[in-house]
Length: 200
Image 1: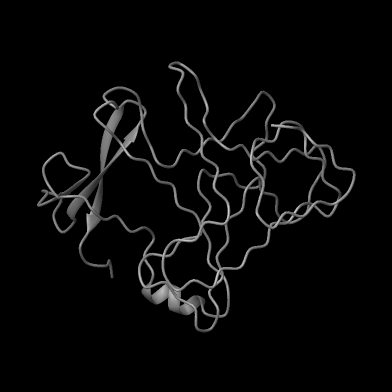
Image 2 (image 1 turned 90 degrees about the vertical axis):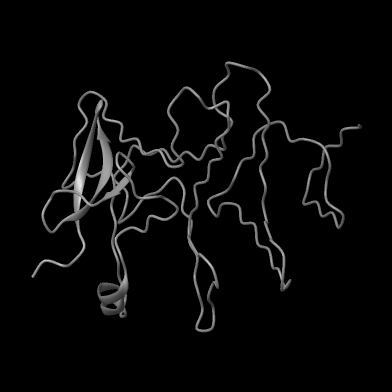
């Protein structure tokens, strides 16, 4: 395939084939990808990054978003943001989320540790924890917060089967607790009590 170097803006009505090798330099305004989809069925994905790892022993396979700073930033800073806005008539008939982490296990995943979502809080020498540091920060805001207070749940666990030793266990001997959920701290499993009725 021949290589062509362009000195100005380029438009293609039928797309481009091949691979990009090099560095994409952005101005202060950044780069924006804007797509519009009017289909009423099917799945629309405006950007797909697909990687096949075929060399045993390699690491990675990911798209990497880095945000580096050595100055005091403003009210927020993020390496990656996923946001969904539902308009006055917008909704999802099934499950709607701003970010989804999905992993498919197989017979080959007999060793190793697997988690659809990994959270790492790195603390090099001399690191400070600021005003308040946590592994998870969850908040709700807006004029309709009262509806969240009354109807939302902190987390929603589906697809598990209650049983002895399972991630979710019922029929425990914790009095009115009624159930436990299994978590792991270090090398030990612990069972957090769950009460079937609210505490008054």
